[in-house]
Amino acid sequence: MPDYADPKLLRPEVFIEQASIRAGLDDTGPNDFLEPLDLVCGGLRQDRMSPDGRRLLGRTIVDYLTNRLRVIDHHRHHPDLHGAPITEPIIILGLPRTGTTALSYLLDTDPRWRSLLNWEAVDSVPPPTTATLRTDSRCTDLLEFQRSVIDHIDPPPPHWEWADGPTECTFLLAQDFKAAMWESRIPYAPYREYISRADMTSAYRYHRRALEVLQSNAPGRWVLKMPAHAYFIDAVLAEYPDARIVWTHRDPVVAVTSFMNLNAFAHRLSMGTVDHEWIADTVPGRLVEQVHRPMAALAGRDVFHVHYRDQMADPLGVMADLYEWLGEPLTDADRRRMQDWLDADPLVASRRSRYDLNDYGLEEEAVRSSFTDYIDAFGV
Image (cartoon, rainbow, N blue to C red):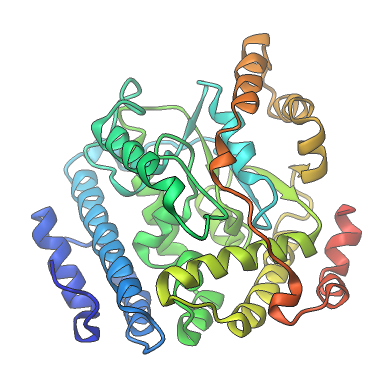
């Protein structure tokens, strides 16, 4: 594999060629992904990116393009998958750092739901079966690797997902190169401006295509989680008009501060340092839009709202209310599995780290005032 520390290699055609060689395929599907990929590459070529960061993200780009090639090829050779129903998916969205991960893990304890698992989102073909969702060697190998490195990551990751657990849809959207994760990892103004106004139609069409592949041998009603679905809510509803929306809420000052800390972690990986000014200029405004867009798009729609404080105080009570809203019974067996997960607390791996608004030159009252209408509307 080329050494992606060399900026001259950070070009769409280089990455596509390497992915094609690995996959033995050359059909990358609709070319809507080329513009954002070119912008991602432009961001990687910045002097501020570290050699290790370029290598890491360069390999990630090839991984994602390889999976895209395989998904498109598998879908093309299985016409029965085209338009396969994805009925009333449960979509969890909201501000980041508002309990979406814990909520998705609790639902994942119930076998009636079909989660998008961390490993399969980026290694989708051949699609797993229901029986092998967590025993496929691709899953177990990644899980073994994660367990070997988690205690050695310094600084500790603010957010962690195990290979065999639910993941964020950002890893599917990122294969169309329209995803907030690229903005978080590569601070680059042209990409920031692009993703702010991007037509997300192609990204969510690819998202559906990947789900059609993944559910072919492991069916079920999807539970899909990504806070930024709120930012892209119009495209979500266009692709999944019958989606059941679950919206999580938390004090926006806490959510903003915590998400800035997550961005800082990403900066350290890609640059070896943190651009505090960039994060302060980008994150608060982005998250204001992440509540304003769904407030407009979801007005009058039946939405289930989860407040972080309630979820922390009485998680099973929140789940009982959620199941009632879904029209599904919450059995004693369901409760036991959820309580077992809570008792095990597997997300403890995302060790806590210190963070403060002052690190970014921001004041609490200024941040809070930008969310006034959201706070008033939802009592957060």
